[in-house]
Length: 214
Image (cartoon, rainbow, N blue to C red; front, side):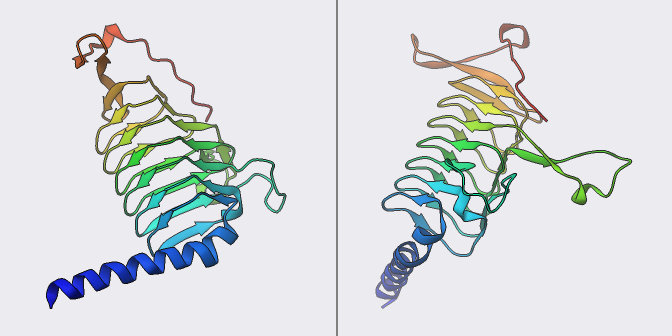
């Protein structure tokens, strides 16, 4: 009886997700690919500027929002693009304004934050909440894994197949095939294609260029 109830609960949840995709999300988002799965509850703002690829999976309690510089004006391209087969854990906050791209096969751990914008920080101006947003394009490369509670700030670039350790804060450029940890995140390992191993990296061995624009 318990097994039957659990199976029925799962099938009912799957059916609700598919029904919402067909009747609601496909209408409000800029574009949604095939076989996407969005768990409830979901908070979204300006979804008409957000594009989802094929087989995107979004966990419960996520916040996926766009803050276009010119709201109401339909853009040729969305300001927030989530690629094919991206898996987003529970309670993730993703915010785009000018160009936030999450490429295919990215895994985002629960509680993470990814953004291409921030509030201005003029201490003599109005309260920070009321100050205008500053922004810079942000890219999460193909196959990246963002661990639990990772924060990726505006203007950052995380290269293909890199891994960002849990609780890290990315505030610049992370090269492809790297492991980075800390706040701010620093590369500690690079993948060696010859030995098929992750090699440790010392501070002097790796040149990090910053591309932050805010």
